[in-house]
Amino acid sequence: MRELGIEFISVFGLPPVEFVHLAADLGCRYISTTLVGRPLESLGYPAFSLKQDVRLRRDLRTALHERGVSISLGEGMVIMPGADVSELAGDLDVLAELGTAAINTLSFDKDRGRTFDQLATLTTMAAARGIATSIEMAPGLTIGDLPAVRAAIEHVGGAGVRATVDTMHWGRSGYGAAELRELGAERIGYLQLSDTTREPRTTTSYLKEAMYERMPPGAGELALADMLEAVPTDVVVGLEIPMRALAESGVGPMERLRPCVTAARELLDSSTG
Image (cartoon, rainbow, N blue to C red; front, side):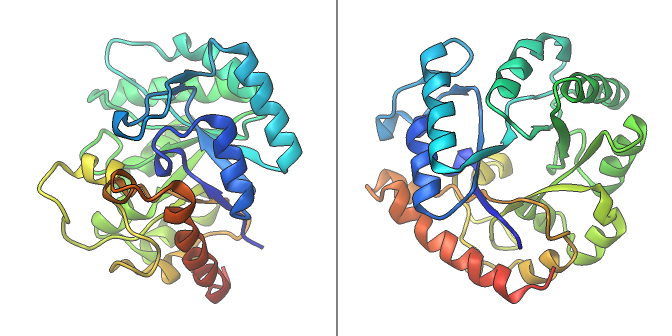
């Protein structure tokens, strides 16, 4: 049976404990999180730091335990030019303390060789803490297409790193179920589910569109059911569906995400995996 999660960009910086209760109330077992929250100012959420706020970490662990929710993915583990991933050791320690299952990484370093080496180092660091590593493909970034994903995984070797498949990135790249099968089920570590149109919906950059405006499953043009058929059923499905316009019009996170969860469950029920 597939399990649903809520991805942190879907809630625009909702405080972590509130986020846990939201996910549980929606019947979802997982959340993803970043350690430093920089919420949209328009929504009035306070900034937070799970790195610095020991009490917040304790309260979050309590909420996770009481509500039966786990952190499926730690975000923010980004490969940057001029920075070394060894500097993320403290962040990984905090994520391990919170029981995080995996980290998600992507690269803004245009040096592909350095990106791959940094990915290997990060994967080793995470594994030492019992955390898996997943690499996200995004159009326009260093790991921006299927060949780059495969090359990155092969560079690290073994079962150390797998792919985060973001259905918006995947679909906008012209990929579908066939490319997922080409990648291989054993290389898929996480699925971030959303729908969208095949052409841009906004005049902003692609990455801004991906960060702020996505669509619930079934509302767009992606062949999501076919994609799900190619993804192992034990892979967590995180709903990555930010809807900034709705949020800033006063629609709260429960009201925004409940229809998304319903649509996702209907989609999952129709898929045999």
